[in-house]
Image (cartoon, rainbow, N blue to C red; front, side, top):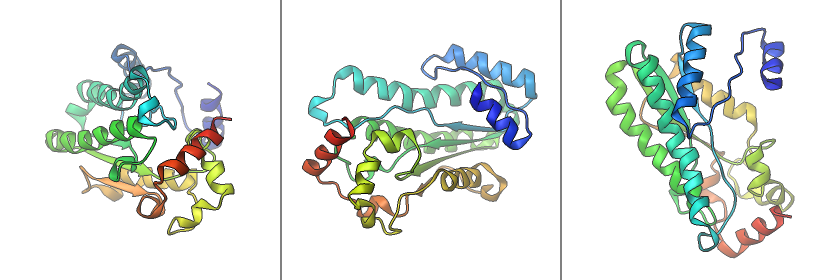
Length: 226
């Protein structure tokens, strides 16, 4: 509620605060019905619900792995399907799925999130093919390390910053929230009207050059947990 008030104050636009558990389709249906009642239309869906933490596969519980899949992968499918059935099938729309580059090279300590996000990237392509005739565009956005976010804190961003590890990134720094907002806006706007079924990587080149050393990353995980 407070976030919605801040958004209204900053933009002067309407904002409808809704509570949704993306693992529970009935809560999505209720939220979509409420949004359509308020605004009469929905043009864009941003799938951004996620759960992540650093953990070696050998220490990852079965339930922890399932929970990440349920939130990330199942949540993305649930919201997309509800929106398709409720509005997009007849009116068209845009879906932007927030994913990651973790699976591109098998990032250590990230088998849960990497598997979940890789599945979403596959889903992006499948849905782009199936729903394209309904004038629905579906794309993924894969951010790198972004300052000022919960993920940055949980995944050792501060430790990496203090250790000058971001110097290994081609652009020599972490990204910021405004840059991710701009990338999302591009995929959601008419500027990308002929773009569908693809992934835009916005990470400063991080996945190409950043360390994937298992022992070193275990040290970051230990430091982040303190």
